[in-house]
Length: 377
Image 1 (cartoon, rainbow, N blue to C red):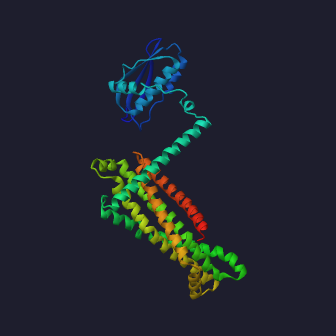
Image 2 (cartoon, rainbow, N blue to C red; image 1 turned 120 degrees about the horizontal axis):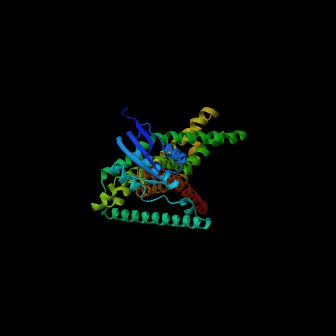
Image 3 (cartoon, one colour; image 1 turned 45 degrees about the vertical axis):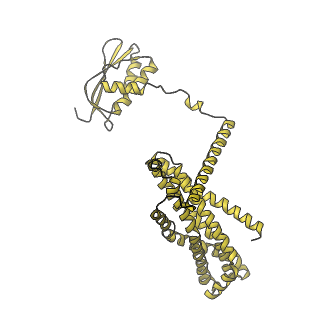
């Protein structure tokens, strides 16, 4: 017999006994016989009451044989036949007993179906639990920040500067590209209406105010949420999976001080600088469209931008970026710390960090806009 073949032969010993002869190697990857042959034999001979096994020619086995035997056991249960396991190898008998020790629960799917009211209650409980978890995390972060101010927080300065570089200099290419494109888009969209009144020069006002007051901070925040916030969640989540965070706690080192604090400070420092850079790139995009498409000179565009953009617009944008930076870092670190112990949990934590960061940016933008409107800014 070929080494990777597996055989199945059914021999009726007497009127009530059917012998199942197993031969060859019953391993995954081999072409295995089907249990349907036994089912068919029992249909043809309903008088058979006992099934035994003969395994003298069995040369090897793995979980493939166990899967086959479980199917045979299910057939015997369904047809109310007796299954004798004495002829099987001892290891197979133990595994089969273990696999069939806890029978599958019937109607399990129906038992977990919840009513609408129960579903709402469960959702409310989950939301409340997530809210408490977030408040606890913010409180621990505030405590770590207070300890840093008093000189008691412990984290490596080298890690902080590496994070600072990752949040700042490494993000410049993508921020440049997106900001210039946003400036180009704003200029093109605005020119459609302004051209009707021969007021193309006000493209500079539109782009300048929009970029410095809101768009620069929002676009930079979204970029950093997808890039840096996800990176924070993935790295801390991986440490959670590898039990490195447990090791830090065992060594008496607070993960909030060692991992979370430097990341929040680094992103809070770099976000205003990146936003300022984004503003300039967006204005550059508007300048390209104005000069190339509407015969506006560099001097005219510069003077119009300088007259329309005031310090209040710039400060509102920088303040928004500072808030966005803190929210993105909090979301990334929070999801990383809440990560489960499996590899798939890291992916879930990363996705959740990006979604939480972007939603936080939009909500914060709405709140800041309302406050500015209330203050007359």
